[in-house]
Structure formats: structure tokens, C-alpha cells
Length: 63
Image (cartoon, rainbow, N blue to C red; front, side, top):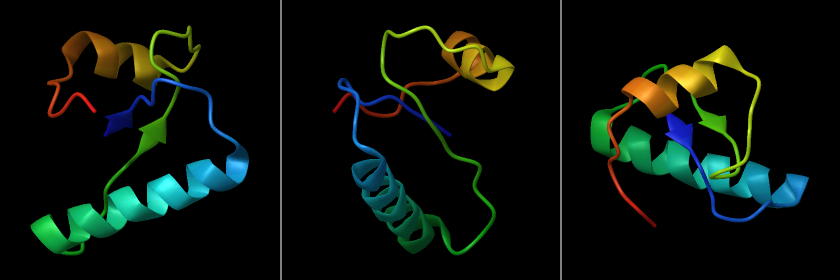
């Protein structure tokens, strides 16, 4: 799962958001392994997984 907030977040805010996202997913899908990457929307990212998610991923929400 790729999460792209619109603005750069402080490290503690990133941890809080990741925890909230994971909790929501676990409630909805049941507890299972979920890979989660957070990067700022529109900014370049050198991770191959980010490029693949941006190219092949399906947008679930626009928040």
C-alpha cells in the first residue's frame, strides 16, 4: 500500500498516521501482513516499489 500525503510530515506525525492507517485496515480486513510505504505526493522517490505503485496501483481514496 502506498500512502501519499500532500505535505511533508514530521517523523512523529508519520508514525501516528501509519499506526492509524494500519488499525483501520486491520479492523476492515482482519489482522494480516500489509506492506505500507508513505511518501509525499508529487515528490520524486527513488524506491522502485514507489515507482511501481504509482504506475500500476489503483487509487482507493483521494484525501
